Length: 286
Image 1 (cartoon, rainbow, N blue to C red):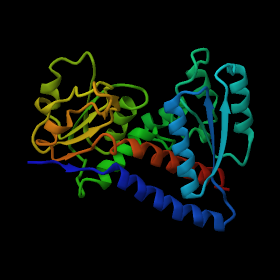
Image 2: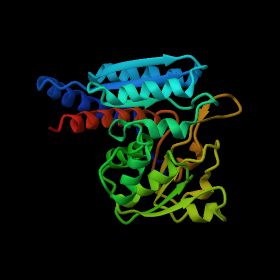
Image 3: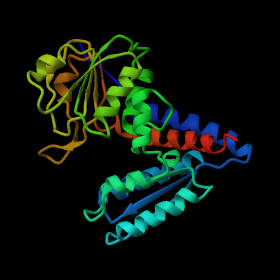
Image 4: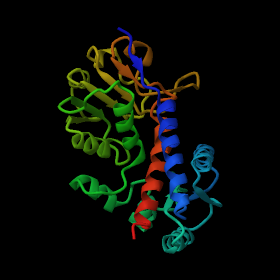
């Protein structure tokens, strides 16, 4: 069999179009949605991500505030800016682009953001809310994976399915496991210390690969008809973008599969935009 491709570009566009319509309705009530993006230094990949976020804001109809700070910006200066943005009633979301320069502690910066403006979903209060099933902002990449599963698989029902998540990072693996539990999947989290990884993966109806190593998931890891979501973004020996999954061989076995690029990547920004909309609703609830 040959897998059906889950088109992240198309699904992310669908979500942005829905948000564009809902944002226009908010504007009729006099409510604006505003995202503040902070970039420290000149990391080329981060600059691309920030440009894409600004473009998404423009398309949907959000206001976008941009703070591009030099690499030598001190932690104190960055925290002062975050404090100012926390206090501004016209700012709904604050995003500090990672990674930060080595002299700035990322954990301290994340903790400084008002949880109600933490549209990246990294603040401990939002992570804790996810853990105990309360409302909060969910990390964008795992939230995007859920939308891919719901919108890109012809009504595939996650309930009761065996899901193996490969990777246990705070940004993807751990929140992903909690979201899949929320969708009533039976969840196994595998990682670098897991024994017999291929055997563990072959049990799975759904495989979510978030390892950060090119081509680590092969046909030997996948049972026929499984849904395979590839979160990895790597470069192969030729410098081409590729995922954690050996796409050519796994796509001959899987039922559904996400490509790299064009799978999970576009969904991260779409879900960031969704979090911004939800933040605006929260801040204007009264």
